[in-house]
Length: 347
Image 1 (cartoon, rainbow, N blue to C red):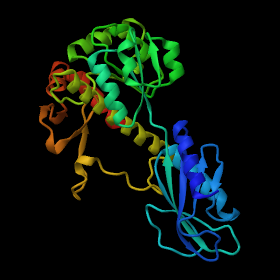
Image 2 (image 1 turned 180 degrees about the vertical axis):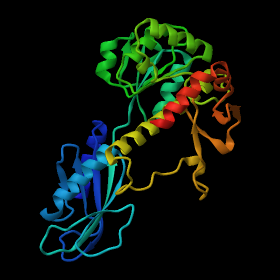
Image 3 (image 1 turned 90 degrees about the vertical axis):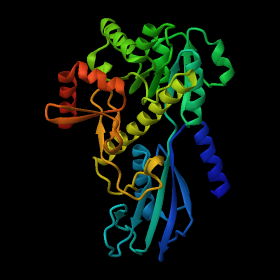
């Protein structure tokens, strides 16, 4: 298979939202049939297309590529019997061929973007659909009236808030931006969906009332833990466009947290064989260590302690919050949120 055919296969898999990994030989020492720059593509079912050496290394490369697909993290792989100093970011394997030789490969997985379901046809919902697509998310939408969504060119638009349709779609994240137009119905459908997290565009007071409404509708407390409200970080938004921006920032944050959790599960919380995670863009210009982070006990958002503006000293400890709303909520029920913080520390 030549390079043009590999590229065409990559494009077809991307269009079909199917995961795969591309492996590239970055070093080869004879005797080996591989050469620097040789490439192969491994699909999620283990099918290998291309060439990265003979049968001796094929099984090792396929297994490593499948692990990279499951974790979503790239790998550096070395297959050799020659002695070498261990490197934290290189996964080493013995060369099974009697002829020995050495090959080193870089494995880059490509995963389909998570499906985000936006509920509502409000100006905030429409803007969130546009921004989320620009962030590389796969966006679907649902609303009682879908006409306003038609101009967005979304691949999937659902009329109404149907539990079965949401289950079939299988969104990883849901953003509820109904803002007064069927809030309880939309939120209940979102909470009954398989989404890992549900973000709600609402004030803190309204969010608390809707939580109580969900309890009354039979949503279990452990499922309510997946509800993030208000949606996204506090950016003091006022306009629908600004509110959508904050909500989509929350979607991006949760997407990356889910990716980190998946990588940790696959690797057993280890880092061997994985390249370092790229730093967030706001710290790319600095080579200083990553700032110490703290999990807000009210909304679960990570806080940079060095720049935190909302701080409370309570019971001999210091707590940090992302916005004044979370700070006020903590001060209203400190015992409740201290218990949440202690539980996080022990898990």
